[in-house]
Image 1 (cartoon, rainbow, N blue to C red):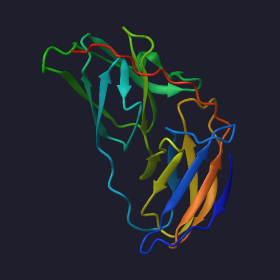
Image 2 (image 1 turned 90 degrees about the vertical axis):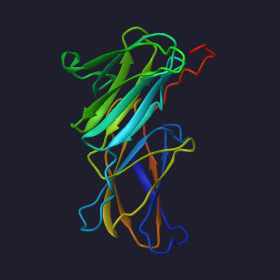
Image 3 (image 1 turned 120 degrees about the horizontal axis):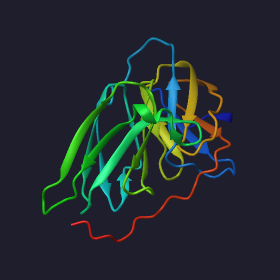
Length: 216
């Protein structure tokens, strides 16, 4: 990955880094996890220790979830049919790192207002792959961040990382469609604010759009 650091308008009282992530064709890359590492002493953000993922219209919603180590994830099935969820650490090429260590749970389909739910804790940092044993097209991801500064890029490929101490930082990017891990990018954060453009070699795959299933 290569990067260029650009000055932007001051933002009083904060040391922020606005990161724009681009794919291999120079287009904005949504749903990329931006991780910022700093060795400078200072206040760290509170960890993200709870999250919810819904199974709806044969999709995991949200498609990518970013949490901290030890977070508890609640899975809820809003579809009218069962889902057999498979959860495990993700290896290179978008496959399960060790299928024998995967967690599995079967959630009954929704009946009326009753929704089946289960909660799992994820203590180990890294990228996790979500699948469904019954519906093979379903895929989702959880990223357990080893940095307190972890954000997901929006539809424009942008992520605002706030509350950074002034000084040198290292920026990493993870995306579900990456083939190899990209090199970290070094940057300098000042209290007046900064913007960083990160170019990657990631070629995002086309996502399956939601269909009008009757899930009640």
